[in-house]
Image 1 (tube, chains in turn brown, blue):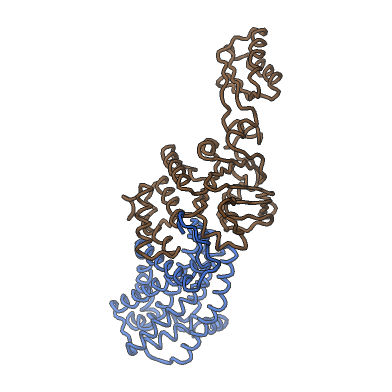
Image 2 (cartoon, rainbow over the protein chains, first blue to last red; image 1 turned 180 degrees about the vertical axis):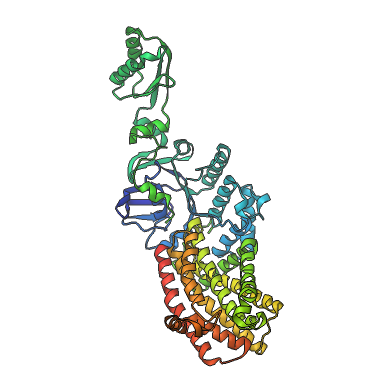
Length: 329
Length: 266
């Protein structure tokens, strides 16, 4: 029991009408680790979470949570999971306290214990002062924290966080990050979906990148970065009219097409092998190109994503399933 | 379920635990009613408006004098207020679904039917409020109960029973329609002919034949007659039996339908 994976999904398929939201997705989350499910809007992230949280049946494939099948043993799975998401939500008409007491009672706690647990969580999530106020008066960040607290009432072994920081300001976002780190330190397994690469980079031990309902890459953040060249060479010519020449040269040498930013006058290209650099410098010099900047830095996950999918992570991919994911039904 | 001891999760829901879930969610409905002053205000003001409108605007013309008409119409206004109040059930279910609260419930190890049962049970209190306000305000305007207090209490009970059946129809609308606005429109369109195509406000004698035919089979007609009998005094056996049969019929058709739609979505 102890060594088994917290989440294991094989070949998950889910269609909505003619759209295939998930097209054979495999996932593994190891106990006590954060699995980041990364992808643009409409990639199928939420559909995957809803299946793993027993809210939606897969059309194909199977998934197990701590060894229990999400379809046949849904009742057991529900005893093990906590869900915080774009959709699972708090009751705005109730106070923060009553929201948490209600969930404790639903989980079978006697009233005093449900109250004690609610108080403890409200304090931990810095909501004690607002405990008696209706949740509809909470700010976005407070509501998200209450949502997170609500998913923790039953001490879940596996926690699904579906875009937990979408729409939050940077401060609230880092608050939520700190809380997630705390939960993992306490031994929870977390499945985190996000379209923010930085978030996955910050929190996830393992990452699964999905796009158009398919897994397009898996690995640790480090492995993913290494996959597309671990470093990025950035070159700015002093004369920005020579940008195209620089780009051509880098294409030739690095073997991949670089991204050119005409605003900042910079060409960036992933490089797998640092021994290329002297050659590149020499050739730039041969063509009489003066350099304003020539720098080698670690690739960001954004660049990894771009090279994996061919489009940036925050761009919707134009897939019809984007609409479906936006709908709670 | 704590992180230190990891007991195996239970396989099934016990019926007792399921009932407890339903009561917890009933408690939630009541808390919401208490804290949502707008809902409470609307629930109370609606019957008051009907009473004022029917008594003072239409009463003289329809019943000869406002007092005589109030005496005739109040049992009908009770029916009308309670029936319209059942729309709240569908509205709340719909809001819970679109806000995501239902998804949270569904991700918890609770009885599948508990959210539905909790919503319906909580609403009985709403109906009781509606009945109390209609009757209370009617008495302020000069309405007097003609029958015995016991008979009047039976009248209130019959209203609640009927509302408890009607609210499953409302729940079905709440589950099928996409937005809360949609629930209000569909509910209004479905209820309007039922409520006004009846003898609630006038006797059906002056209506055209086809409408009289509709009024004759409309459950609201029987319920109104039963309420007149129980509150003002008059024939009881037929209208009360038929009202109860209608309530049972509505419940038997719409409760399973609502539960089915709910399960399919759940």
